[in-house]
Length: 238
Ligand SMILES: Cc1cc2nc3c(=O)[nH]c(=O)nc-3n(C[C@H](O)[C@H](O)[C@H](O)COP(=O)(O)OP(=O)(O)OC[C@H]3O[C@@H](n4cnc5c(N)ncnc54)[C@H](O)[C@@H]3O)c2cc1C
Image (cartoon, rainbow, N blue to C red; front, top):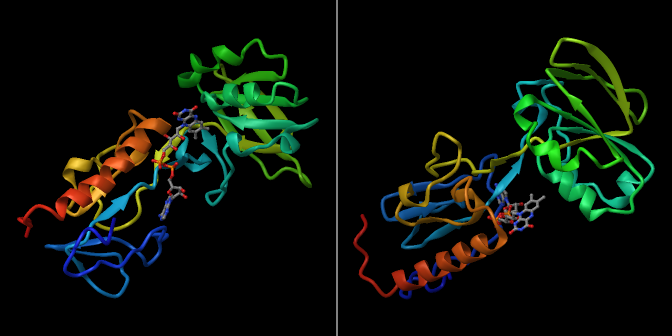
């Protein structure tokens, strides 16, 4: 695609650059720069960095050490769950997906969820592997050895301590827009129509809606065609 973008002056074919830290997008007139030490004119950049899991620090109902990063539940495999007790923060639908994906796995999921997730946990309520913990606030402790501990304050203020073998997230996702000149909406997503004329946003990064494999594939294909057709039109942007 990058080769089509400028038939007279081939653009560097760069894919899979990890943007972050000092590498970020800059849009300058007809040029784009990815901090690759030079301004690249007449090229286009496609951003499809999707979403990533919200962390404990993003949830007002969780207190945890600031730097704590936990994996999302969907990353837990059978070996991570078999015979173990997992504390799951949040009642997002990935809990149901996990249980259906591992129907024969002997595991115990302690699902701590805020009031806002109450309607989502209905689908897992009857699963014998699940213990639902309606939470007003949860404080994640250090745990002992390989285990994790938490103090759970229920919605009426009652408190209980829980211990598990590991903790996972099911709080939800947030857009992972790379740093730089990508235009973000109030919700953090990057509306395709508001970007630098040479920036194309595809996939889940576009919006909280339509987050499906087929729509991501479609918009990725459209992004490639967009750049291809652009080489056949006179350049009008400045
Ligand atoms: C648990 C789960 C279950 C799902 N089930 C379904 C389903 O059954 N059916 C369905 O249609 N959809 C499902 N989805 C949604 C579907 O997976 C997404 O809509 C789709 O993968 C979005 O594709 P994408 O290319 O936009 O983003 P992603 O697939 O998220 O890819 C983004 C890529 O960008 C990379 N990246 C992130 N930041 C940077 C950076 N700074 N620099 C460089 N690279 C970066 C990431 O490492 C990743 O490889 C599910 C999603 C999840 C999380």
